Image 1 (tube, rainbow, N blue to C red):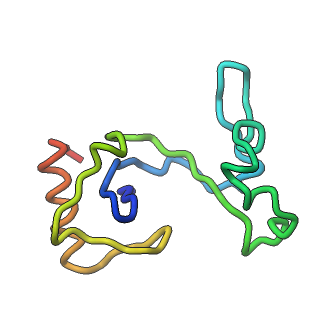
Image 2: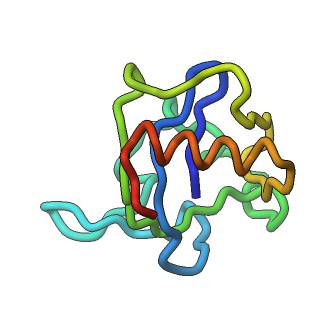
Image 3: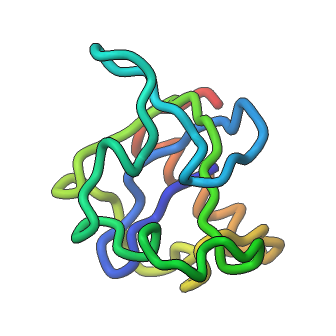
Length: 113
């Protein structure tokens, strides 16, 4: 998965290594044991997790475990004219522009993946 922050640029590439979990049920390993996102983040950071309607399957938020292959800080995001961009949270690009984008990111980040 390639991560693009809208109007900022690409900040990482990673491999999804497991099944999805509801955000309220996913556990992160921390120094103080396993914690859910609700235990780690405030309502002001993730207000949608605290809404009552998130009990519904279609409106619930999900997380997947990721093994990060390469990341950069937001301030070092890579962007240039001609790269693939999409406003959706997740997409499976099939346009030639996507192949160009992956090749450019590999060149810029010196990636072998």
